[in-house]
Length: 196
Image 1 (cartoon, rainbow, N blue to C red):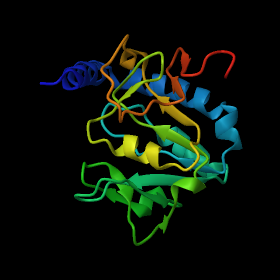
Image 2: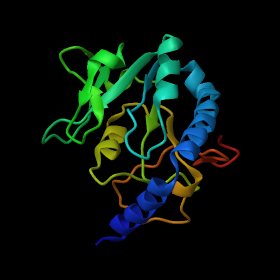
Image 3: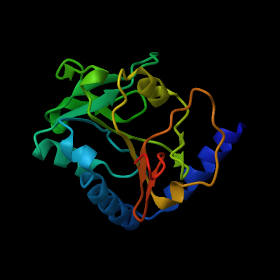
């Protein structure tokens, strides 16, 4: 087993052990912090994801983006493909179906396709993060490839529980960092104070 796989297993086990009530409470705190970000407030087109299992619960952010009249973009993982497909979703209740990995994702025939350059803000999923905003994903490379494909990089924000922050992780040349990691009790930035 690789170093990345070991770390993935350890952090997922910790995250899975977090009780539902604490996960919901932490998710509410994190959502409030994300919604307060100037980059989120200014964004007209927000890319998020539909959470699954013990992940940070994205429902609050999804609801806010829709209520604020932002274009909500959700990804679709193509069968056998390497690049996430991006779609604008107006009505998650009727426009999403379980996809390849069991994650609810857009029905292509009901949703408008979106180009990466239309997106102003991205909520990025992940398993583990460092205080330097390095990211360990689920191992398929979808988000690393997507981030590389942005012509101009929009703000990349990860919402995670404090237990997902690790002191160090193995990093490959293709691994993409995020700009901010927001937990229930801290905000980490990949920029130094003078650049932020």
